[in-house]
Image 1: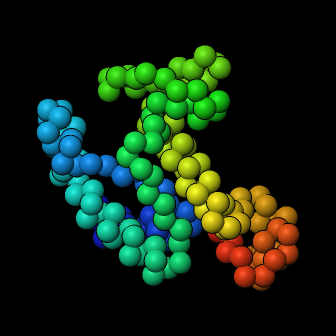
Image 2: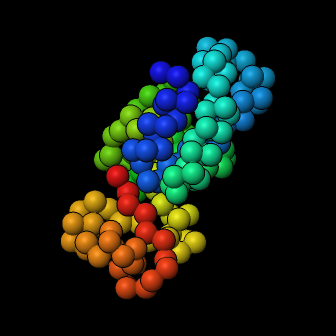
Length: 155
């Protein structure tokens, strides 16, 4: 799928978009040739540019997580940090949680994006909450009834 089509699909289907900032130049120097080649081929920066301007155009929330954020090494259930190698594909935590490394990273990036939105006064509402509070959808009110606060639906 082309970058424009994929970025349009991502932005139209999600109100909150969290992405990880990658240092492509650092990766190019690291010697991980297969990984680096696939990231460079994907045109990550160009794709993020498309997502950024489309998110602004359609009023969606985009948060780019710092590249030093340990999204893959932190358990998304309990928050414990682990030492993982690139070939470790499963995170097995002492809390009993076992999850694929990439899925775990995606959950952590999503949670970080939501945390940043809440910190700047955005009300983040899950779909179940939307059904219970229809006034949020129709009047753009926060759960406390304040007008003017931004309400973002999380899907």
